[in-house]
Length: 175
Length: 51
Image (tube, rainbow over all chains, first blue to last red; front, side, top):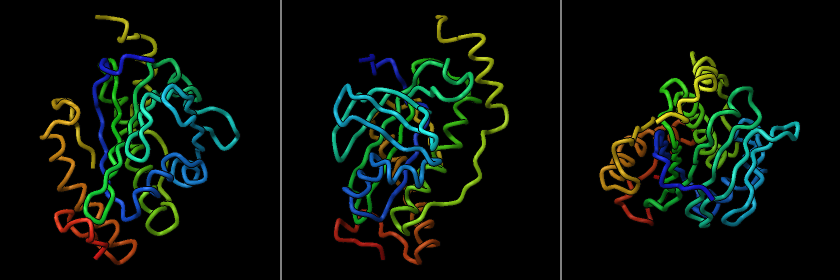
């Protein structure tokens, strides 16, 4: 287990979904759902603290790997997040991703929090700030209208350069 | 919409409050455009289904 206290929240995305809370939770942890709204990735998660977590690409390869830090169905999931399947990205330190799911009136509030243990450059944070709204907007559509959104993929300008620079300089080893 | 909560500890009151207003309005806008039905504000209580 890692020391989660070393991680600080850097990006938070909040959305409200008109669906039963249990169904929202199911959509977060069931590969049949994640394949629809998460860029085609299938979640593979051992439902316990300390269990393995992976996001599998359509070809079966591991895109993201990690470990379950908190497993509190149907309200909270927290995993470490290591992007293993992308060039350079796999050499960055792992981050933490959590989902919090709470009833809010007749809707369900879903909060995604991305936390980091080092001073991540803005240009790298923009990757998540571009991706999470696409993923969670599509999750909301899947649950409310039964089909995902069609959204352009791709990384923000300067993102890949910033990742390469960070991998070369390894600022997380300093200070 | 993206919030940057660096200045707030996890679970802080301020952070809870900024998780409300705009995300609720924009989530309701999206529901309205996709389904024709908006969302009731949560202070209407648990019985408030999509309006």
